[in-house]
Length: 178
Ligand SMILES: CC(C)(COP(=O)(O)OP(=O)(O)OC[C@H]1O[C@@H](n2cnc3c(N)ncnc32)[C@H](O)[C@@H]1OP(=O)(O)O)[C@@H](O)C(=O)NCCC(=O)NCCS
Image (cartoon, rainbow, N blue to C red; front, side):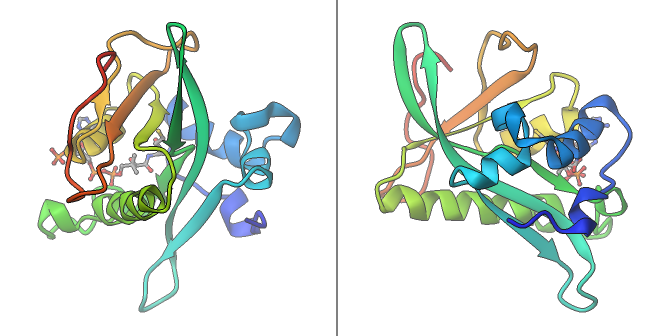
């Protein structure tokens, strides 16, 4: 993704975990996975979501691959490095059925892409890191079948994970460490 100016200046809120998104978008490539620039140079796809009527930027999402080490085992993972909605669109449309909120539409789209990649041979695990106080994000991910790792990562962030099955796209089984 070319880092479009409108994404670099993206406002998704002022809580510490929300400010992290801005840092991720503008961080230098040397920070590795903690920067969008590195992710984009390393096979991470990023999508911008816009309102059809006005072209207004609602949010963005991303999807890549990594390997998680759990105990001594290595697990290939399709990772969601970051996802965010512009502050204006949090909880919106307020009068919509919750399943049709922008947050759910974006997550559904990212998961659909991950399922497609799974069918093409990408890892069956889908995972991400989330700030422990980011309740809106955690609830959103839980609504899509992701479960929290019991222990926080060294960074203090929480890992969340789910399996993608090729058969019916539904949750199959979760790894022992979830
Ligand atoms: C994470 C994010 C995309 C979620 O979008 P959103 O529009 O805020 O989410 P929703 O309004 O659909 O809320 C999701 C759930 O959390 C709940 N929720 C939202 N804010 C909450 C809060 N402050 N406290 C408790 N629950 C909250 C909602 O009620 C909803 O629960 P439900 O599905 O059971 O009804 C959005 O908040 C965002 O862009 N945050 C900044 C960037 C970010 O944190 N990205 C995640 C990186 S891991």
